[in-house]
Amino acid sequence: MKKIKIGDKEFSVSCHASCYRDYADIFNRNILKDLQITQQFASKQYSLSVNYKKEHPEYSDKQIYELIFNDTIKDLDEFIDCITRLCWICIYDNNKEIDCYEEWYQSLERLSLSDDWMMEVMALCANCFR
Image 1 (cartoon, rainbow, N blue to C red):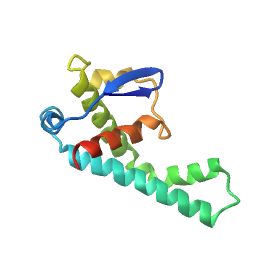
Image 2 (image 1 turned 30 degrees about the vertical axis):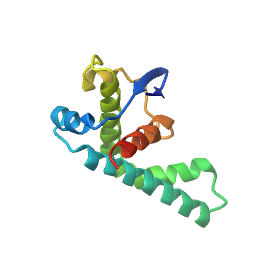
Image 3 (image 1 turned 45 degrees about the vertical axis):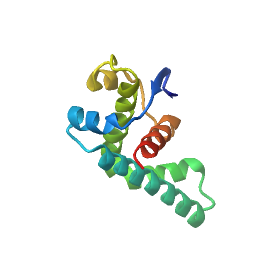
């Protein structure tokens, strides 16, 4: 069992084969497709970061972050939806008594693309289903 921190809240997470079925039952979506969406988004951000740093070494990290944000904003809603569903199912896998997804999501104070939990959840799910 792993622990992740979102804002000031800590959650225990796990991912087992049952997550595949539970995800489909609860969200009516395919967990592997949503995982792929999150991985593609993260990969795109990384590639843009490398390219912008190479093309514009004079730019500050903040300027590069703004360029990346502007280039990926059209995909941001889908990424946030997918990564939060993946996170919730990993919490649910460990604790069936968790609030429903909507209530849990509303309880989060903030989400930041630089938060470690996003990569941790993607890695946890990827390791479960490879």
